[in-house]
Image (cartoon, rainbow, N blue to C red; front, top):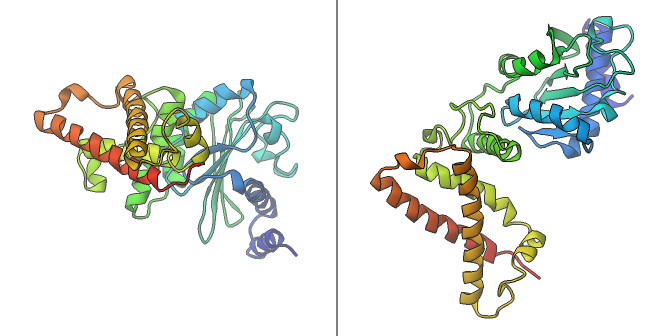
Length: 308
């Protein structure tokens, strides 16, 4: 007997409804199948999206507010149409067979995983979500329209699956970067974010101020990019990246780092995420110093990477 079947047997032995036990196991199996595509705290499509899927995905992405450890999968009709509850669980059937389904599955890992399954297709007869844990259906929320379902997701997630344990510094950073990544992708400033958990909006979370928080965000955006030798080779193609003279090489790296930083600052300014005109003289001076310091830090990271 495999691990999932053992889990279902245990739930049923504990007097859980066999129907909800099997359906939760099925949802967990789906998430396990796509686990390699998952990144905690981020909504991840489990299959390449078609053009027709993008408006739905972007709408969900804008509204969905995930704590850093949650796993969330977006299932377009290519995948979602095949994932249906057992016929015996009529109350969990939210969309007719043959209609294009859009599902979101969210898991809070733990000793006993909690899982939410959302049906948010505009073709759903009963858009809404169902919450499971330990093989039991904990509750369901039904909505009049798919739009109201998506709009109410942050409230349902905060109440029923949000991680409420004490956050560490890395959690605040992860949460904030997920929000900023979404603002960049969507080109919108009004992406849902809880400012009490975002170091960009509440710098004291990381024992910082708004200038340092801004440059922490810039560094966290650029650090992954500076760890990819393939991309860096392309960006440095026209520079002296192979120069034996270290000063020339570091100068090229510094130019690249500053250009990248200006790109991020332009996003912040363009979306009006921070009011630069409100900086005091002291903050303006700190801005200049942090710009230089962050560029040097990125250059130091870059100089450690072997480039061809």
